[in-house]
Amino acid sequence: MMKHFIFKVNIFSFVTLLSACVTDDFNDIAKGFVPVTPNQAAMMASDQYSPDERREGITLLANSPFGGSPPYVSMYRDYVIEDGDPLVRAAAIKALARYAEVSDAELIVLWLRKEDSESIQVRREAAVALQRIHNPVVVGDLLRSLGDESEDPTVRVFSATALGHYPEDRVLLGLISSLDANELTINLASAQSLHILTGQVFGTDKYAWFDWYKEAHDASSNPFEAMTFFQYPTFKYETRWYDRYVFWEHHNEEKPNVPVGLDDPNRRSTYDDSSVAQ
Figure 1: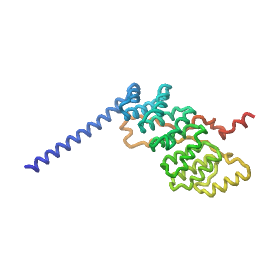
Figure 2 (figure 1 turned 90 degrees about the horizontal axis):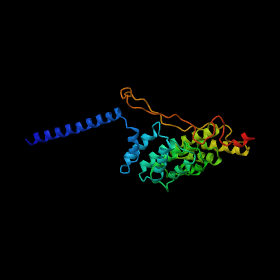
Figure 3 (figure 1 turned 180 degrees about the horizontal axis):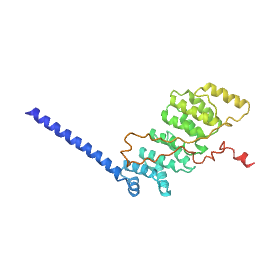
Figure 4 (figure 1 turned 120 degrees about the horizontal axis):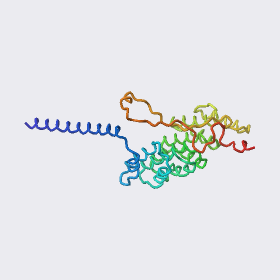
């Protein structure tokens, strides 16, 4: 009798759990059919009692056609500075980077520093954001993150990529040195930035890069003469087999582009102003 009772209770619990799961699934589908309105997204982003709501609201606004409106960009900046929740701050950094001005790099780079941010997620987003903004004042911090062996490897990888639009000797030396890193991802990101900056192809061979750089330096030649154009990488959505059935989802994909503050990509270098003016 007792075994029969336990069996019935277990069946009841299973059915209850299954019903809850099905209900949640249908709720998710309903959200797809009834998308969040701009007003709702703004209210979510300003919810001072729920970090999850703020994070989701910021993300929705940033990915919307009107996400670059001045009031929203000001809100992203405020959250980067003031919000104490690391995931909200990370979302705000990501949002701000989409609509940033050159001066925003000076705000974002603060959160790349360990002494200012203990959150790896925040430091990752700061490094990614700096790929999209060209401002030479951040080079020192990017090199510091890249060379910090105790830093999270993904932060170092994103920093190596962000350095790919700064044709400076210290950047070349820092990237070449990072080819010694234990993580292959760091080696490859550094080699890619070296290739963009110089047009040379030595892969992850640190000694070949050093030999080439020394020869260029001794010959007083410009190591950036063959520099190619940097475009920040973006996430590419991989189409799923069921996407044509989930027709209510819209994926707003960005394409790689030139960082804000970087000169016309039809020019070889961002440091040619003096020669052009002559």
